[in-house]
Structure formats: structure tokens, C-alpha cells
Amino acid sequence: MSKNELDLTRPLVLDFDHAVGPFTDENRIDLFDWQERVRFGCGLSTFSQLSEYLDHQLPEAYGTVFMGSGDYHHVTLALLERLRGVYSKADPIDVVVFDNHPDNMRFPFGVHCGSWVKHVAKLPFVQHIHVIGITSSDIGAAHAWENYLAPLYQHKVSYWCLDVEVSWAKYVGLAHAFHRFESADALVKAFISHHNARADSSRPIYLSIDKDVFAPEVAQTNWDQGVLLEAHVMRIIAALEGNIIGSDVTGEISSWQYTTWWKRWMSSMDGQELPELADVQRRQLQHHALNDRLQVALSKATRV
Image 1 (cartoon, rainbow, N blue to C red):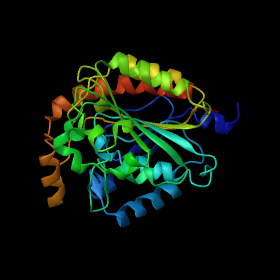
Image 2: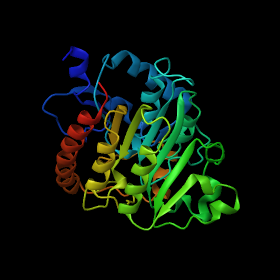
Image 3: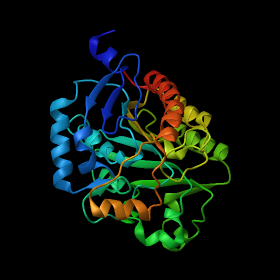
Image 4: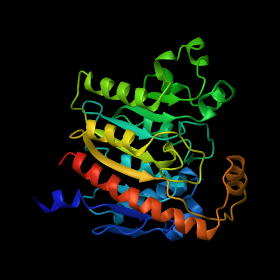
């Protein structure tokens, strides 16, 4: 096995919030000084500065990227942008996102953890984005106007959801973009069948996991959570073995008090609570164990 092949099995920690526990063999980049600027969201100028900084810091090859809190899920966009030139419109990739939220919501001030999917949909080498495991009311009728609808109409984004009423979609011509199921087992079975039936079953896939997609007993996060069990996500990872060319994980539980007024306001609007330090430390042990298992599964499934 070559050095680069070994590096593809070595996890990379983008350490914004010191929430990701140590792996036996890892790369780790200290980004704590970026926390206030980037956490939850930032302007496009700040995001470009972060992307440029990462270009100089990231190793040539790396395995699954662990980024801490789900408040950093928009950093996935920076990781995907690095694939420009490796893939193209003629040789595209799909993106599979596990998340309790669509992450395709309106945010006019740049990019944030709830809007980054819209930006990924604009990348010419991304064929399609599947957001799997949504139970959030963000995709219900009352919040329909908050979703970026263009990527849905353009067949660039699909929502795979449970426990939320989405019948409104068919009345506006978006039935093709919403796949609703009565159980997590049914959702997983349908997605795997969809993947296996693709005309181009070898198309590369980038996979991103926000652990708020899990039921709280699997791993408690800072956000409202879904209903998937670890076994559901592991089944899909196994089904995608050999297609995955990169991956990341967010959703650690961590605590941060913003000094930026609009971040304090928006995080409170989203119902985020600051957990007690002792509770954070206890729950992080649960996350560390889950991270180890996810890293092993993703390493095995990643194309070398």
C-alpha cells in the first residue's frame, strides 16, 4: 500500500472547537482561532479566507474529516470545492448528506450550516445531492418559502424524509424531489435500491454526516434530532462501498457563547441551548466511540 493510500485511511480533524476526541492515528489542524468567525455562518469573504487557509494546511491526501459541531457543516463546501479540477461536468460526482435538516435554507448574508447545500448544487461537477434522514419541519409547508427551490426544480437536490408532511411539494411541481417514508427501515431500503438501479452505478460519491440525523440515544447533539439508528447509516455506507471518494462528519456536542450579535440571535431562534460543561464531557465520550466506528466503516468503504 502506497503512502497516499495509507493517508486515505487516516482521519483528519479540523479542530475548531476541541470537541473531537483523539484517534489512534490522525492528522489534526488547530482552527480554534477561526471559531467565532466561522461557527454557524459567515460572509463569503471570510469563507474564502478560510478556504485559502485550508489549501495551505491540508495534507495532500487524507481520510474522513471530522469538524466538530454541526455548526461547522458548511465547511463541507470548502472541502468539496477542493475537488474542482479532479472532477468535471463530464465526470461528475454525487453528494450524499445525512442530516435531520435540508441545509438548503435561505441565508442572504453568505453561507451557514443551514444553507451550504444550495452552494454545493452550483458546483458544475456535482451531479446530484441526496439529503437523507430529514424529520425537521424545515421542509414542511409552513417553511417551504425558506427553502431554496431552484436546486429542487433543477433536479439537483432530493430530500429523503420521515415524520414530516410534505404533500405541498406535489402542488408546486416538486414531487420528484421529495421521498417520504413511514419508517427509517423503508427509507434505507429505498435509497439502496435507488443507488443500485442507477445507470451509472460507479459514479463517485462524497458522503457527509451530521450526527443530528441520529436518534438522541445514538449521540446527543446541540440540534433537534432525527430518528436514524447507527445501523441505518452503516447499511448505506456499506452499500456505497467502492463509490465513496471522500467523507466528513459533524455533529459533536460542544458549547460556545458568541460575541457576534447576529449569531447569538440566530442560534437562539434555532432553539440551540448551551449545555452544562459536565454534560458536554459525558456526551462527548459517547461521540468519540461513535466516531471510531464511523471512521472504520468509511475507511473500508472509500475508493483507493
